[in-house]
Length: 408
Length: 92
Image (cartoon, rainbow over all chains, first blue to last red; front, side, top):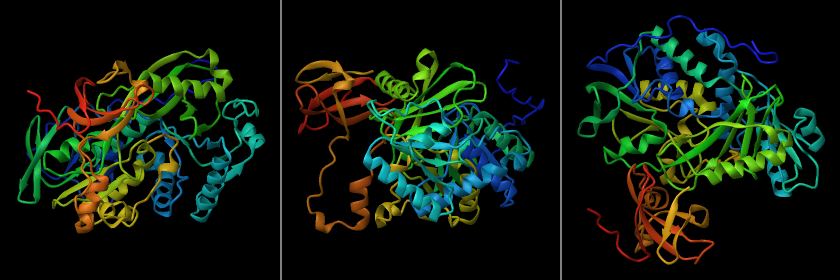
């Protein structure tokens, strides 16, 4: 054990079985990321649906779940978003007990920085909106920011001076792999089949009813099918001729080498497109904005991380000596209003959970509960009712572009 | 970093360009005749293929002109660039 770092908990000898797929299930979930696993868990636990398979083209939680920056917060502007993300945060607060598995949820708070008068006004507005929705939020002046995070440069003579920040103390980070493994273990314990190396390539259908999926390991019949395939949802929907209002983009992040604990909270900045926390082992985890172009390549452009690092260095001069350990990109599906699409489709028995863009991780427990409800009852849970596909025809958009620290 | 062959200036680094999304999305000929569903599709729904995609780019800090490109969204290969107003080329 290195001084100053926390020892990670040991894993049990066996996490979950690795079964052969059966030829038929009541429910098939496509995608064994956090959302798919949480949905399977809640189908079994709350909806009494235990004949469930989660199909994964690669290995369990090896897609965006392995590629995110693990930030958890609920300080969204609009009522619809605040409700679902705050419900997720409440579930995060009890998740370790619920799953019986460590997830290292660390409520170290999040600062969303303001660098212009307009940022300040928007930040104060968001704090007020959050409080009206029962979300913990406060407005901090630069001295208050410095108190929460002493390594931030709050001097006035920099290119993007810190004029203040919103602060959500209950926000934080969790260890993403452990979250996935906790859900997988708990779901498998209820009888859910977790099938890896089983890419879904299309659907079985009877008219407008979906009756199963085509996979790399043969056809699998299903009473209902839920898509939780993140950036690749369009690819699957295309096989049905089902168009979704999604554009897939690379979203990059990087980690530094291991450092002593220097960064006590999470810092995000809309204006300079960087968000930073320090992982439990000691790496600085830095997220960037999405690359502008559509892309499925799981890598992005170097100039994006160059700008992101320049922004980080201006805010945190103490990072100047840190070395980059690795960079990567996830493929995120961005919707026109920067809010998720979670609900029914024009096909009977097919449900989508997509469009989370850059922010799906924090919603994981709420997605599990709401998507399981939607699939089991063939109607949305009240929390995800505003996030149906129909909003793109009624105009009832939930415009949350301002609530993410990412250009998208 | 992609090297994008501007049809007017030649190959330049990606940072010189602005991305314009899907190409060949025509404005409705008779907007007043569209249903809410048709409007929703026109405004919000774009193709999102994993593979070849006809899209628009602008050489913002070069000649400033818009052009179309066929790019593979999985490999980043720029298969063809062509002028605005030209029909989408059939390749292979």
